[in-house]
Length: 83
Image (cartoon, rainbow, N blue to C red):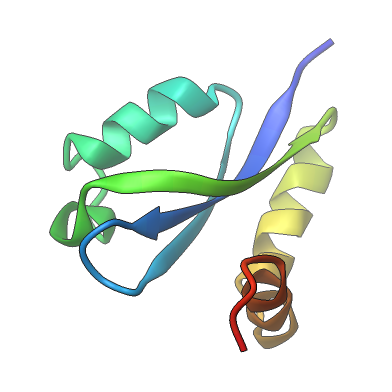
Protein backbone atom coordinates (compact mmCIF):
# COMPACT_ATOMS: atom_id res chain seq x y z
CA UNK A 1 0.00 0.00 0.00
CA UNK A 2 1.30 3.45 -0.90
CA UNK A 3 1.76 6.08 1.76
CA UNK A 4 1.65 9.80 1.20
CA UNK A 5 2.37 12.55 3.66
CA UNK A 6 0.97 16.04 3.89
CA UNK A 7 3.44 18.01 5.95
CA UNK A 8 4.05 21.41 7.46
CA UNK A 9 7.59 22.72 7.71
CA UNK A 10 8.70 25.59 9.92
CA UNK A 11 11.78 27.63 9.16
CA UNK A 12 14.35 27.72 11.94
CA UNK A 13 15.46 31.24 10.95
CA UNK A 14 12.22 33.06 10.13
CA UNK A 15 8.64 32.79 11.35
CA UNK A 16 7.33 31.12 8.19
CA UNK A 17 5.82 27.76 7.30
CA UNK A 18 5.56 25.66 4.16
CA UNK A 19 2.96 23.02 3.27
CA UNK A 20 3.59 20.16 0.86
CA UNK A 21 2.91 16.52 0.15
CA UNK A 22 5.19 13.63 -0.77
CA UNK A 23 5.53 9.87 -0.74
CA UNK A 24 8.96 10.06 0.97
CA UNK A 25 9.02 12.58 3.78
CA UNK A 26 12.65 12.04 4.82
CA UNK A 27 13.91 12.62 1.28
CA UNK A 28 11.67 15.66 0.84
CA UNK A 29 12.95 17.32 4.02
CA UNK A 30 16.53 16.83 2.79
CA UNK A 31 15.59 18.41 -0.55
CA UNK A 32 14.09 21.43 1.20
CA UNK A 33 17.16 21.83 3.40
CA UNK A 34 19.53 21.50 0.40
CA UNK A 35 17.77 24.33 -1.43
CA UNK A 36 16.13 22.26 -4.19
CA UNK A 37 12.78 24.02 -3.77
CA UNK A 38 12.56 27.63 -4.94
CA UNK A 39 10.47 29.01 -2.06
CA UNK A 40 12.10 27.11 0.77
CA UNK A 41 15.75 27.69 -0.19
CA UNK A 42 15.65 31.23 1.24
CA UNK A 43 14.45 30.15 4.69
CA UNK A 44 16.43 26.98 5.42
CA UNK A 45 16.99 25.08 7.62
CA UNK A 46 13.51 23.60 8.01
CA UNK A 47 11.97 21.22 10.50
CA UNK A 48 8.81 19.14 10.21
CA UNK A 49 6.30 20.42 12.74
CA UNK A 50 3.24 18.49 11.56
CA UNK A 51 2.48 15.58 9.24
CA UNK A 52 -0.46 13.41 8.26
CA UNK A 53 -0.12 9.99 6.66
CA UNK A 54 -2.65 9.37 3.89
CA UNK A 55 -3.06 6.22 1.79
CA UNK A 56 -4.44 7.81 -1.39
CA UNK A 57 -2.59 10.36 -3.50
CA UNK A 58 -5.74 12.23 -4.56
CA UNK A 59 -6.77 12.67 -0.93
CA UNK A 60 -3.28 13.90 -0.01
CA UNK A 61 -3.39 16.48 -2.82
CA UNK A 62 -6.79 17.74 -1.62
CA UNK A 63 -5.54 17.94 1.97
CA UNK A 64 -2.46 19.91 0.88
CA UNK A 65 -4.69 22.30 -1.06
CA UNK A 66 -6.91 22.72 2.01
CA UNK A 67 -3.90 23.57 4.23
CA UNK A 68 -2.93 26.25 1.71
CA UNK A 69 -6.38 27.87 1.95
CA UNK A 70 -7.29 30.54 4.51
CA UNK A 71 -9.19 28.00 6.65
CA UNK A 72 -6.29 25.56 6.43
CA UNK A 73 -3.76 28.22 7.48
CA UNK A 74 -5.95 28.99 10.50
CA UNK A 75 -6.01 25.28 11.39
CA UNK A 76 -2.21 25.07 11.09
CA UNK A 77 -1.83 28.05 13.45
CA UNK A 78 -4.17 26.34 15.90
CA UNK A 79 -2.28 23.03 15.64
CA UNK A 80 1.01 24.83 16.20
CA UNK A 81 -0.40 26.78 19.15
CA UNK A 82 -0.28 30.19 17.48
CA UNK A 83 -3.07 32.73 17.40
